[in-house]
Length: 341
Image 1 (cartoon, rainbow, N blue to C red):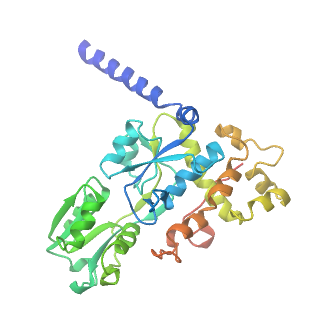
Image 2: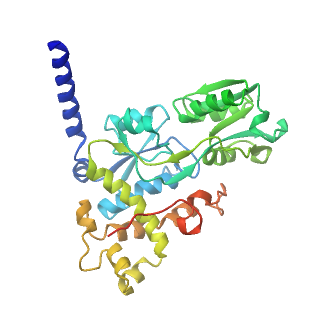
Image 3: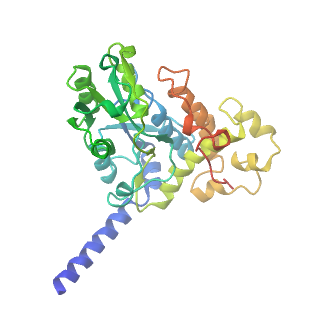
């Protein structure tokens, strides 16, 4: 009994040390002069290096927004490409300060893995893509199909649940790396590709003859994609969270990258002035451990949520994704920012 109690005490002490060590991310980030951000190894529209090695995409812009909030400079970011398997180890170990990598917020990841999620930057759901030549119109017609899926994902678990619930048989074709799944599907090693529907639109662009492939209508899961940080550092968690809300709030207020300076100098609206750090009683920035123009720096450096969405994955991009659930709450979507005051 004494041994058990001692072991428990040691374990609690070790956990306390680990928690303390993980605290102070903001100070660590400021000391090194940049944010180390975990991103996808390459997903068009979300996170992908261009021909010059510069990272671009929806998730990349989130990293840049956090850098703008902290440093006033969106370019003070370094990127760590992570697979579905390695992303969690990278965050747990401190290799990255922030994970912005199309990652689903789930109870297991929030508790057992020791991460914190709050702001959902993309509401998604799992879907299926098939070659048009299969002449399949619904996922319910996929019994007996070989299905390409990435290991270490909620996608893999949802796939098993969906086929079992609908009494369908399937053969999983599983790979760790996204590039391996893509290659297998393109080589015809499987009949079906399953992942988040946003990812399917991106992956479809990478296959030969994209018009020969179709995304089926079924959405079989809820996939709230959110940035994640380690538990035990509330200050850093708040900064990462409220960066997302600032992007949404700016869109609600009609503040854009192009007009933010004009509005900052001319607006008499107390909420707008407080948001941009010019109202006399503004404290929200310093309460976060930042400067009071933190939100102004985000919008000046990156734009608002709608701009980030449309620039990377929206209707005028090759992905042509509609806002849908990711529209503002005032336009029938789920994007909603709590009061910033």
